[in-house]
Length: 196
Image (cartoon, rainbow, N blue to C red; front, side):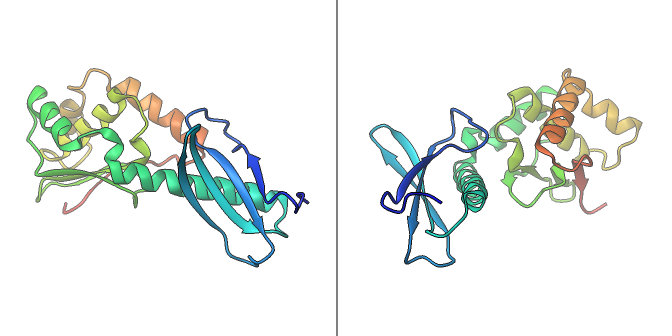
């Protein structure tokens, strides 16, 4: 059990990612079941402040820290669109690879088993927020894949010829397979076409 005289204890998430904010855990005897977290900007960098019950075990503290940090970072990324203008990027790729321009492209957080999806009838494309931190060529490969679906909704030879206009498709596919495996995500991550 932590020293109750010092309610703020530093904690490092298990991933030790240097780009992740530091974590400060505050234990409170008044807090019986609830857990909350917030980000704070300080002179020495960003800190996630996690408030938990004083009687929480170290295992609970570790689990809550990882869960709350992941939620706060995902919320922040989707709010800023990870600095990538998906519409502009997709328009440029459509022009470069002679594919139709989409009507809209956006990040979504509800695709746990797909990298991207599209609705050809409306020309809309949705990209999983899990791709916000991948190299540019990987995101471009997924965008070209979805742009190809605007022409051909099924994964047949015509579709493959369109999608493989992007020269790094095979390498990007390998990257995505490795990413899914290392993160423990479902191995069926792919794309989905609506309105077939």
